[in-house]
Each structure stands twice: as C-alpha cells, then as structure tokens.
Length: 305
Ligand SMILES: [Zn+2]
Ligand SMILES: [Zn+2]
Image (cartoon, rainbow, N blue to C red):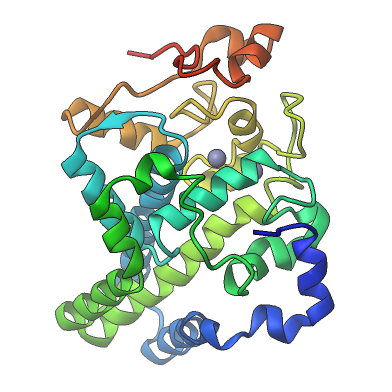
C-alpha cells in the first residue's frame, strides 16, 4: 500500500472528501445525536456519572487492550481472554482490533515521517486527530504487520463485523435505560472517548515535555495522561514500547497500568512487563534494548513482579 505523503494527498483532495465521506455518516450522526440528546434530556448528575463511568471503561479497553496488548504485547493472557479482550476492543467503535493494532504499529515504525499515518507535523491537527481515521485512505487491515494475531481465526472472524459490536452496546443501552441510557451511557461517552483517544495522535506529538530522545516528536503530558488513563506519557512510551507501564515513576499517574495490575492479580493476565532501570535512566543500554532482537530471540526485557 502506498502511504507516501498521505496527508498531503488528502489535503489536495479537499476537506469534504477527507472529513465527510459517505462512510462517515454514522460517526457524524452520533456526534449530533450526543449533543442533541444531552440538550433535550437536560443536565443531571446521574447522566454525568454514567457518561464518566462508561468513558472510563471505554478508555481502559482502548489503552489496556487495543494498545498495550494487541499493538505491543506488553503482557500475556489465555486464548479465551484474548478473544474477550478483542470483542471488548471492538465495542469502542474504533474499527477492528487487528486494524487498530496494524495502524498503530505502522505509526511507531514511521513516527513523524511522511509515512506516519497520523503525524500532526505532516498533516496538521485535524488530519492527525480525525482525518486519517474518518477518511478513506486507511480502511484496510494490514494482515502482515499484525500476523502474530491475524493467525487466530476467531480474531479474523470478528474483525469483519466490528461495526456490529458497538451497535449491540447501543441497543442494549436503549433497552435497559431508554433514551437516558442511549444518550448518557452510550452516545456521549462514545463520542468523548473517540476524541480522548485521538488526542494522543493529534496532541501527544506536539504538546508536552520530552524526557528521552526517542527519534520522533512524542511528548509527556500529565493532562493528556489523565484524559487517556495513562497514554499521555507518550514520550516514555515511544522510548520503550515493551512496557505495560507508561508512567515510569510513581507520580506519573497511569490508571490503565493499575487496572492491568488488578487483572494480573486475579490471574486473567500475566507476565506484565515493567520498565528496566537502565531504560528508565535513559542510558545507552536502553537504546540497545529497543533495537530489533536478532533472529527469533526474545527482546531483552525485565519483567516486573
Ligand atoms: Zn504505542
Ligand atoms: Zn505516537
């Protein structure tokens, strides 16, 4: 697939083709529905509490499963729970889990170059925030980049029907909670969790500080880390992708990591990878640890108990 200068090509086509293709009707309709529904139903603390709770659940799924498992394999799990995680990943309406992981791996491989699928440095804020995912340039799943997971037939099977999963969630919210459930437990947190997630692509390579010379423009940002349950420590993450933990110090709040520790505590996941001291210190050894492992050998990692 030719991805050279994708942002430039998209911008040459014009904003309408990039941001308003017919395939984005559901996406934009849900935005309108969330805003209209919230206004029509009016403010309520119960509504806000539902929206906040469901936002948190969605964000944990995106960061803990889509990102830290399917994209980076930072811990291990059983085949049945892997399947459960994949189904949950697709309830967040960010396309199929293999699609997600494949494009994310490509982002790391080409960070902030013209081959990066969503670099704000090459495409600007709106392209990196939503143009690349709402537009039609990157609709296909790259099975080669995610061949480690694409070999599971059950994951390939649900990948095709990814849109069905959030629809089931929306219908369930309506059946259980009526219009209140549909708006406050589904539409509002869905839209907010999209934009919360997308800040990592649009802002985390622009806004914040840099602890490590990671070879790209990634930043650490405590505000984005709160919004995204830990993903805002993005410079840490680009420095060392193998860790399930992205807040490298105790004061770098990383709620997803705490959730993963809880899943490990009850035995659903294990071998949760931490940050080796030399990596945290940013010495030359860290750079060596990030280099590709020689033919088939496991990468040099230290598991954290
Ligand atoms: Zn990543
Ligand atoms: Zn990044």
